[in-house]
Image (cartoon, rainbow over all chains, first blue to last red; front, side):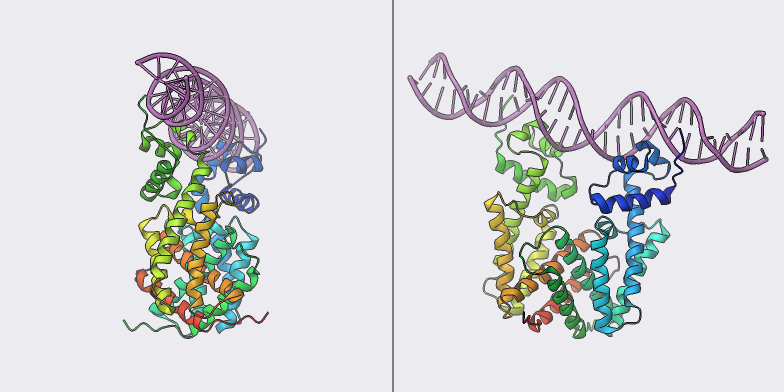
Length: 191
Length: 191
DNA sequence: AACCTTGGCTAAGTGCCTTAGCTTTAAGGC
DNA sequence: GCCTTAAAGCTAAGGCACTTAGCCAAGGTT
């Protein structure tokens, strides 16, 4: 039996590639094993099981997304930064349709890298909101609103929820413009 | 073997109840069969399989949601109607955590009731937007934005994506207030 | 060269979905 | 009131996914 020479890194990375090809829901240990040229139980030497693999995939995807979001906003501010970040968000979901759903999984508290990746992603969002003068509780509310809008749009789009012929890019652009308006006159909480 | 007297209605309705109790992902033909006091293969006399059941459940949930949305807006207009509808939307997701995810499934074109339910739900949203003077392409964009924001918020909330202690009800309220602002100054498309 | 850790394997068990084919209920016609 | 028959239930069996247990060989370490 020639050794393939796997480790957790290679397994998780290949899982990410496979997920992008066949879809997050169709990512299966059986398919991953055959892709890696290995019998299914051999994967358990590198990953504790299907759920642990999903968690590791989530950590990978979250870190990638955090990088994209952070990178998109450098050198920009205000509505410029918002638009750039929103585009980066949706671009990532388009380029990595299998990884994107993994980013929605709650970070594993036992995995510091995962937690840190999640914080970086949120931090990038909060940084953009600071350009609108939003901080503290207002920033929390606004960050939730921004995440909701972007994730909701991407999720509905991926699910095929937009049936009408109207251009989806344009709708997204309008959504982001609406967010810009909303953030500029965000109702200040006085509590 | 005494007959239980099932039909498609009773099976789908019980599936909806079960989904609300155990979660959409944990809804399984095995659990449903035992709940109905019947052997698993017997379900196939009423439903073509697991996927068909999910589709029928989607039709049921979509119709219910459409009713709630429509009912919430009667006698209201403008921001009033928007707030009422947004509350009804999230309320439904809270009251029916297992059915709500089913509403995101694309309606089965072969099921007229399902298609009609989807159209009614969208119609309720469009009616509210008309109160903001939004029609045609603008209404399509705005409807997509509204659905994205509401679904995104509900989905993130259900997934446990809001870690911070900040009150979630308040964040939702702020989101809806932001939508109101955005719709009032929605950028008119000139194309 | 011997050792031992480790990465691969096969075998076997569980849970779920699905199909095939049998039996019995109970409704409707005569 | 019986007989027919469609439909609603059943058991049996196969497929696919995940998981655990336990064996064996590859290859680095001493």
